[in-house]
Structures are given as structure tokens and as C-alpha cells.
Length: 431
Image (cartoon, rainbow, N blue to C red; front, side, top):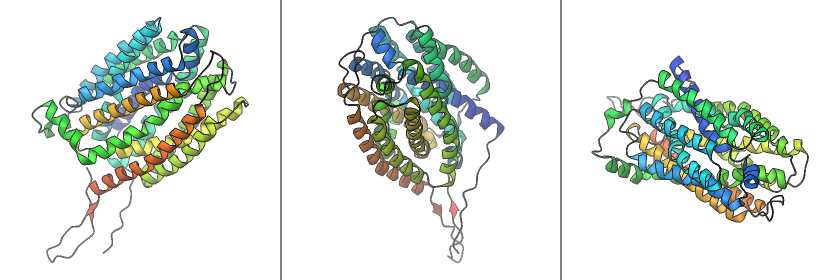
């Protein structure tokens, strides 16, 4: 008899809702700390008298240090309570952000970003391991939709406020703003989040190096690692120079940038929960593929615009980020379903490391392509980056398809054999 397997919506418990809120706010502070560099790119390059290549080094300094940190911590990630690991790295993130807020020279800022990356770059992977431990795969599309809203919230609230503070005082202000918020949040996580220790009973590797090797050498895991590495390059190529492009090429006033980011973020706030729900109801890969094709088209449009009204560039940004979010949410949910519980911390750490390091290479690469003759001249070759990013998005469709196949094979229905050897309705084996 042919079975009909329905995709039922599993409701969240009250504690799960608290966890979602805490992790979303954690992501908000970490993403804002990174994202605020993009709108400050024009101010920083002029204030510190640095080139696009040097600014690319500031961005990639965070990414490379985060990547190294991810590899170094991967073997330990499943050996301790995930709450304790999270709080340890968040404390280090607070110190790095304080250093950013006190930096006075290019060299000091570069060093501060490296320190921040060593700690902040691992927080996302730890959060992902916690989500995967506490939420079923049928819930994760919605969870990712809410947690990834931190990205949109940083644009709606954080970046506009950061730009306002930077315009009124100087570029140090936004980092101190992030620090103040993060201190309060860290204390709340300490009080509200329960220990996450279920994975500890499943550990079989004798030492951290053995655990790291078993995770990194797993064939199914490597498919996810490769997809993540390619997925991460696009944003690191375009976003670091986004505000400089809008100011110098599109002729958007510096004081109007906050409107671009705020309205784009508001659009993302509305679209992300919808994408999350669709990802739990419809095939996640199909959502990703559609979002990728749309994002490819909008990236080409965005990187080729010239002088235009403020409303025009806002509309293009909103439409482009609709495609970006439609890629981010389903792909993250799929990645979370690849590792077994005993490997999740290590998998997420390695995955985060590859994400950051490939992003760092992308930022360095973009900084070598983009050219600015003087402080106020247009950026050159930004359109070239658009073609490269769109091509990588196309490649990602095939890589994420392979990830989707791995996840489906892991959770495929298994037949129940009766005594008389007849096959009854299949039972879905979930993690």
C-alpha cells in the first residue's frame, strides 16, 4: 500500500522560543559587528587614508582569524557543554569589540579585527550545533528564518543607528554600541540558557585530534564543506565595498545610506519568516535554486547601476536581498541536517572555518580587483565582481543539490517488514 507522508508543522515549546530569541540576538550582535564595516567603508578609507586593498585586509583579517579559530576548536567542540563553549567565545568577542572601539590607527584596527574574529567567528557554528541538538529537521527552516532575521535586524536597527552615531561622532561609536548591547545579552544567556550536554554521552573518539580527523574525513561531510566554502564567497566580495560603491558610483549621499540599509532590512524582516516556513513545507533545495537564480539576476543589475535616485537603489537592494535570503535560509537548514549528533560541534566549527576563510580570500580577491584612483573617484571593476559572484551562485546550485541528496538519503523512509514478508506503510527515520 502506498503511503502518504505529510509534512506536519511541529510547534515550538516555550523554552525553544526562548532559545530562538537568545540565539537570534547573539547572531544580531556578531553580525552587526561584522556588517557595520560595510557602511563604514567610505568613512574608514577617508579617515584612516587607506586604499580599497587595505580595507579588504581589515575585512579578511577577521575572516582568516575566524577560520583558524574554527579549525583549532573543532576537536574540542563536542567535548564540553555547548553553553560553556558559547559563553567562553562570546566573552572573547566582547574584548575584541572593545579593542575595535578604542583603535586609533589602521594597524590597531587590523589587530582588533583579528582578535574579534578569533572569538566571534566561532559563535555562529556553536549556535548552529545548539539549534541542531534542540530542534528537529522539520522545525529548522522556521528556526533559521527567525535566527537569520538577525541579519535583517542589523540592517533595520543596527546599521542605521551605527551610521548615525558615526556621522555625529566618529567611526569608533558603532563598535562601542555593539559592545554595550552584547554585555547585557551575554549576562542574559548565562542566566536563561540551560546546559546543552546530550552529545557528550555519544562521544567515542579518544582525543580531540582523532575526533577532528574523523569529522573532516567523512565523505558525506566533505560535500557540505565544499558547498559552504563556495556559498560564502559572494557576500564577502560585494558587501565590504557596498557603501563606497553607492557613495562614489551611484552618488548616494553619505547621510542617506542609513535609509538604504534600513529599508532593505525591513524588507528582509518580512521575507525571512516566509522563506523559513516555505522551507519546512516545500523542498528546501527548490527554494534555494529559485532564490539563487533570482539573486544572480539582481547581482548583475546591482553591480551595473550608475547614477540614479535614492528610491531606485533602495528598490534594487530590496529585490537583491530577497534572493540572498532565499538562498541563505534553506541552505543553512540543509547543512544542519548533515552531521550526526556526536559530530555536530566539530562539523559546525570546520564548516564555519571554511566559511570564514573562503570569505577572507574572497575579500582579498575583491580588494585586488576593485580600484579607486582618489578618495572621491568612482570604484572601478565593481561590475566584474558581479559577474564572478553570479557565476559562483550558479555553481552552488549543483553543490547544494548534492547536499540535499545526502540529507534525503539520511532521512529516507524505511519499509517495515511483516511476518508474511509483505511491506506495510514506510516509517520515516529521523535523527
